[in-house]
Length: 137
Image 1 (cartoon, rainbow, N blue to C red):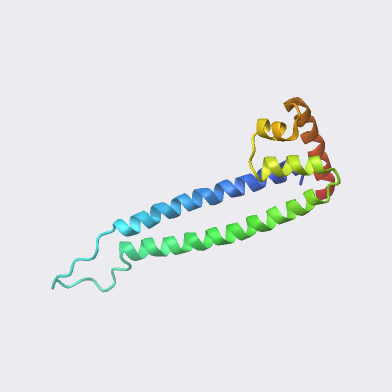
Image 2: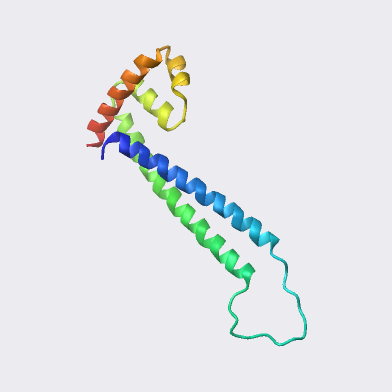
């Protein structure tokens, strides 16, 4: 897998985990908003199944477990990528890749911190991706 696709894969994984966390927050809100059962002396169907609260809580738990598994996979992928970046000999290439893909800095911020023009930074970024391709391949 080429470096750029690998970096995009990690970004998609992070986005997917974030959307799951948002769904988790909605489920939590739903579970706290479900009214408590009303008790009366009317007979109920014993085969009715689970209550809405129970269903919501089970979905919450399942989604929470999915998120934990996804976060473990993401952590593994990030560590693999960081090790590959660490094998690149040029420190400015490492800085550019980490700043952009792990710290999510803008091109302007990276260029300013390294005292480069954006045009030169883009050129170095391309070279850094080529070196990362070599390390991953």
